[in-house]
Image 1: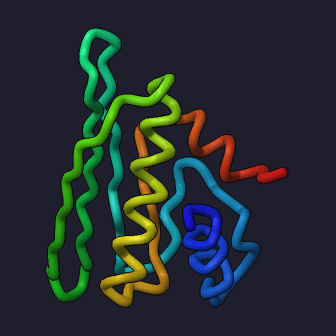
Image 2: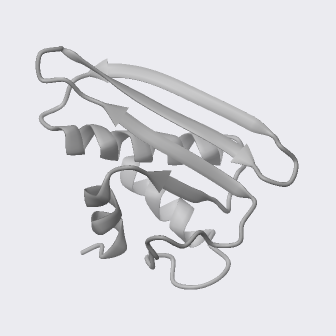
Image 3: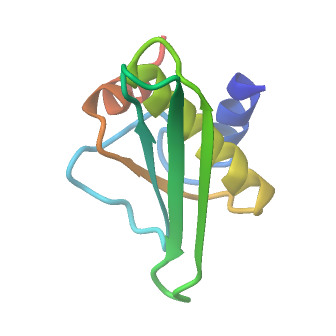
Length: 113
């Protein structure tokens, strides 16, 4: 299911290479989704969150979720991105800029193998 959501999100990109990520530049889309995962080694739960906004219409959506803590903070950040992608698809948001504060996630999706 997670890989299906990612693949679907990539197929619906209209312009450019769907795997191309340019750090420091934001493509000219009106739809932005910021994602984050919170993980603490001393806690048994982790938190996921996303915030969507459209820069033209000012439409805003947000989501939070908690789940059993995974094995690493990186796993939690990836879970947050995948969950946000699934939520955006459910809201029929097909062209999206995803923003994260995790450089390792950016590296992973920039060069999928």
